[in-house]
Image 1 (cartoon, rainbow, N blue to C red):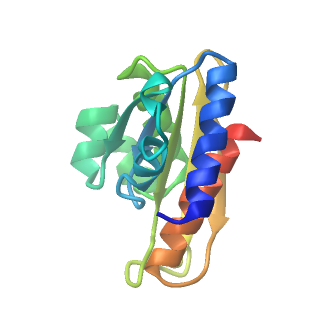
Image 2 (image 1 turned 60 degrees about the vertical axis):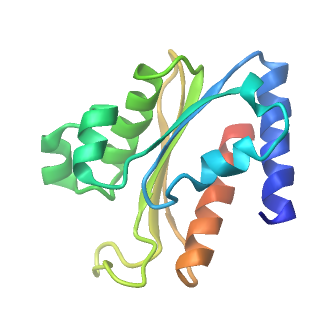
Length: 158
């Protein structure tokens, strides 16, 4: 793993430990990479509860409670889906906060409305409103996924 990602994950751990909080992740396009970064930090079991890798729509529905209507109306790559994913991660875990990511890492799958590199990230702390963003990353599949991991972790500590 890149040293920058490990440093960022360590900063997240310090942030969460200082607040006596734990985190869960809900990942689609990053395929568990956020959870992998977190668990690369020694002692992360004190602040990482669990990760959900919900690549398919059915997994999003079964594991996180994303509604079929949301997927049909807005698509898997949408603010609405990311928001339901993060809420589901909190509901299906013991975590105090969660992050969810969904997007199009490419090289295929993009449209004019949602080109390759379109990413939605949602963050939530229990009993707080959901924050979500749409980001347009560029580069190849690996670069888009890595930028998404960085943005997701930074969003938790800023």
